[in-house]
Length: 110
Image (tube, rainbow, N blue to C red; front, side):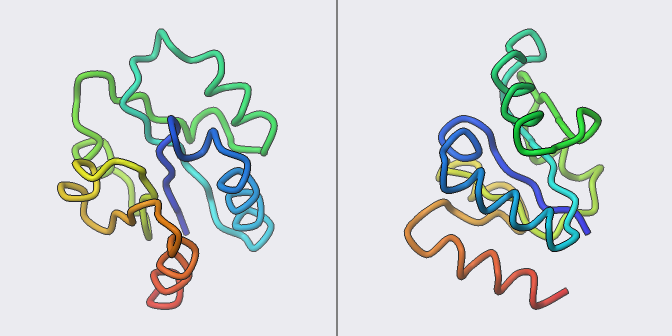
Protein backbone atom coordinates (compact mmCIF):
# COMPACT_ATOMS: atom_id res chain seq x y z
CA UNK A 1 0.00 0.00 0.00
CA UNK A 2 1.77 3.06 -1.34
CA UNK A 3 1.54 6.68 -0.21
CA UNK A 4 3.38 9.45 -2.02
CA UNK A 5 4.89 12.67 -0.73
CA UNK A 6 6.16 15.75 -2.53
CA UNK A 7 9.61 16.75 -1.31
CA UNK A 8 10.17 20.53 -1.31
CA UNK A 9 7.94 22.19 1.26
CA UNK A 10 6.42 18.85 2.22
CA UNK A 11 8.64 15.89 3.13
CA UNK A 12 11.56 18.17 3.91
CA UNK A 13 9.65 19.53 6.94
CA UNK A 14 9.92 17.90 10.39
CA UNK A 15 6.20 17.22 10.91
CA UNK A 16 5.82 15.51 7.54
CA UNK A 17 8.99 13.45 8.05
CA UNK A 18 7.51 12.22 11.34
CA UNK A 19 4.18 11.39 9.69
CA UNK A 20 5.95 9.50 6.88
CA UNK A 21 7.95 7.49 9.46
CA UNK A 22 4.74 6.73 11.33
CA UNK A 23 3.08 5.47 8.15
CA UNK A 24 6.07 3.24 7.40
CA UNK A 25 5.86 1.80 10.92
CA UNK A 26 2.21 1.00 10.17
CA UNK A 27 3.23 -0.92 7.05
CA UNK A 28 2.74 1.67 4.30
CA UNK A 29 5.28 1.97 1.50
CA UNK A 30 6.36 5.64 1.28
CA UNK A 31 7.37 7.12 -2.08
CA UNK A 32 8.79 10.55 -2.84
CA UNK A 33 7.49 12.15 -6.03
CA UNK A 34 9.26 15.43 -6.74
CA UNK A 35 9.30 17.87 -9.63
CA UNK A 36 13.08 18.13 -9.23
CA UNK A 37 15.35 16.81 -11.96
CA UNK A 38 17.52 13.83 -10.96
CA UNK A 39 20.60 16.07 -10.87
CA UNK A 40 19.28 17.76 -7.69
CA UNK A 41 19.21 14.59 -5.62
CA UNK A 42 21.54 15.06 -2.65
CA UNK A 43 19.16 16.43 0.01
CA UNK A 44 16.32 14.22 -1.27
CA UNK A 45 18.50 11.14 -0.77
CA UNK A 46 19.62 12.41 2.66
CA UNK A 47 16.03 12.78 3.88
CA UNK A 48 15.00 9.48 2.32
CA UNK A 49 17.89 7.72 4.05
CA UNK A 50 17.18 9.42 7.39
CA UNK A 51 13.56 8.24 7.49
CA UNK A 52 13.98 4.89 5.73
CA UNK A 53 12.54 5.50 2.25
CA UNK A 54 14.03 3.09 -0.30
CA UNK A 55 15.96 4.74 -3.13
CA UNK A 56 13.83 2.91 -5.70
CA UNK A 57 10.80 4.70 -4.21
CA UNK A 58 12.07 8.13 -5.25
CA UNK A 59 10.61 9.55 -8.46
CA UNK A 60 12.32 12.61 -9.98
CA UNK A 61 9.89 14.08 -12.49
CA UNK A 62 11.99 16.94 -13.83
CA UNK A 63 9.97 18.64 -16.55
CA UNK A 64 7.40 15.84 -16.67
CA UNK A 65 4.26 16.34 -14.58
CA UNK A 66 3.99 14.39 -11.34
CA UNK A 67 0.60 13.26 -12.60
CA UNK A 68 2.18 11.17 -15.36
CA UNK A 69 4.73 9.60 -13.04
CA UNK A 70 2.06 8.76 -10.47
CA UNK A 71 -0.09 7.10 -13.14
CA UNK A 72 2.50 4.32 -13.09
CA UNK A 73 2.18 3.82 -9.30
CA UNK A 74 -0.82 2.34 -7.48
CA UNK A 75 -0.90 4.88 -4.64
CA UNK A 76 -3.50 5.71 -1.98
CA UNK A 77 -2.72 9.43 -1.81
CA UNK A 78 -0.10 12.00 -2.76
CA UNK A 79 0.56 14.77 -0.20
CA UNK A 80 1.72 18.05 -1.75
CA UNK A 81 2.01 21.73 -0.81
CA UNK A 82 1.24 22.94 -4.34
CA UNK A 83 -2.28 24.05 -5.30
CA UNK A 84 -1.44 23.31 -8.94
CA UNK A 85 -0.25 19.77 -8.24
CA UNK A 86 -3.29 19.06 -6.10
CA UNK A 87 -5.64 20.24 -8.84
CA UNK A 88 -4.12 17.94 -11.48
CA UNK A 89 -3.13 14.81 -9.54
CA UNK A 90 -5.87 12.32 -8.70
CA UNK A 91 -6.03 11.52 -4.97
CA UNK A 92 -3.75 14.45 -4.10
CA UNK A 93 -4.13 15.96 -0.65
CA UNK A 94 -3.15 19.56 -0.04
CA UNK A 95 -0.73 20.15 2.83
CA UNK A 96 -2.73 22.36 5.18
CA UNK A 97 -3.62 22.27 8.87
CA UNK A 98 -6.05 19.40 8.21
CA UNK A 99 -3.66 17.25 6.13
CA UNK A 100 -3.38 14.45 8.67
CA UNK A 101 -7.15 13.96 8.94
CA UNK A 102 -7.45 14.02 5.14
CA UNK A 103 -4.65 11.45 4.75
CA UNK A 104 -6.14 9.19 7.42
CA UNK A 105 -9.56 9.42 5.72
CA UNK A 106 -7.95 8.33 2.44
CA UNK A 107 -6.28 5.38 4.19
CA UNK A 108 -9.57 4.31 5.76
CA UNK A 109 -11.24 4.14 2.33
CA UNK A 110 -8.81 1.45 1.10
